[in-house]
Length: 181
Ligand SMILES: [Ca+2]
Image 1 (tube, rainbow, N blue to C red):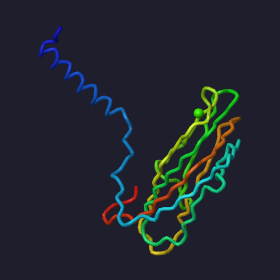
Image 2: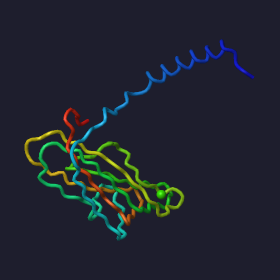
Image 3: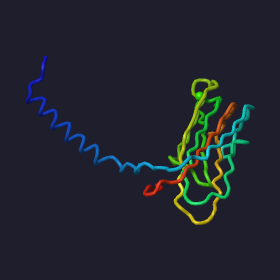
Image 4: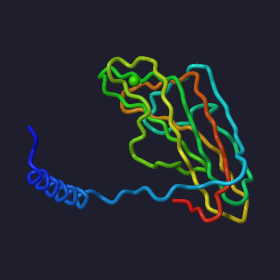
């Protein structure tokens, strides 16, 4: 069965009207223009093989998962990649294990109140997960500390274990004409 050209046109008009309605109903999308960098990055990496765990509902530092970077001049775009084998377990099967990345004491982007890295759903098997975040710092005359850190947190009653994690930081300069969000 083929729809007539007229009914297709009508459907198109209705779809256009609907999409306009949906577009008006949604909040403004927050993403800005991409950040561009210049120069050769300073790449640093660190890792840990040992198993470590926490039940903390407050953000705590993953021991050793920190890359010091003191005395940074000018602008900086810091791209952080973190991956790990994780085990998120909760007797109620409903736990959430979260990872946040901070650079120079600030949250890297994207910023959210929902940083889930792993969940305890269906028994909590060991799994590999990763996240990549970007922190951007506009030009500044003095020196600053852009140390990168990995923070972890669990939901109530949840155990978060990590092993064989790897942290990599690439720091660039901000390209002329590019701006931080
Ligand atoms: Ca899981």
